[in-house]
Each structure stands twice: as C-alpha cells, then as structure tokens.
Length: 146
Image (cartoon, rainbow, N blue to C red):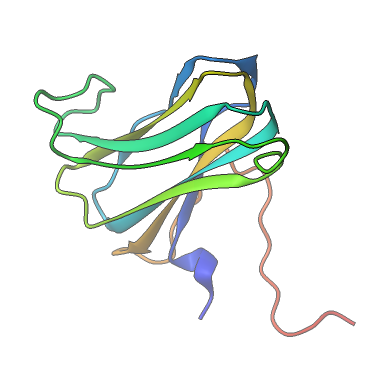
C-alpha cells in the first residue's frame, strides 16, 4: 500500500514567532475522509509555557465556534526546561461528527515558537487523493534506491 494515495496533507497554519497567543488554523472540509490528525511543530519553548492543541468541528466552513462547543478533541502540555523544544503536539479525530474542522493552538504562561501546524486527512473515499497546494513537492519510490 502507498500511504500517500490515501491521505491529504495540508499546511493549515504557518510558523509563528515566540508569543503567548492563540493560533487558529485554516478550516478543512472532511467530506470524503474518515479522519484527520493535526500536528503542531514546536520550536524554542520557554519553561512553564502551556501549549493546548484543540480540534473543533463546525457545520459551516468557518472558524467561528458553534455554541455550545460539543464537538472537540484536545491535548495540553506544560513545558519544562527544554523538554518541549523541537517536538510535536498532535490530536487525531476519527469520524468527526461535523463536516468542517479546524485547530486552535493556545500558548499561555510563557512564550513558545511554533514551526507550523499540518493536518493529515486520512482514509479517503476517493483514491488517489490530490495533495493540497501547500505541498510543493511529492515523490513515491518502490523498493530501496541504489
């Protein structure tokens, strides 16, 4: 099996300088996919920084949060001296209840640099998938190169 024919990768949030702010990703349309994994790439994270990655659902193609927020998945991490530098935080949502999803990464207590956030939509109904325009190069190799 070739994984790249069954998934779609999208850069949903660009890199962000050190701050204590929320980053809200682009909205993804989940029609034709069974799940999505959001992966936030950390850079230099100051000790005590609290990073929370949440994936939210919406019935509309919008980052406005439906009220009440019932469709979400979240994970949080509090950084130590250097244990969050150059790492990832991820949330995987399988069979989201709402058609549209987006991510929110909050950075509180202390500064954190973010290298970007990518989303991997998987178990596509239509194969092969077409990669998002944010993927600028792609290759598939069979076997081991000599």
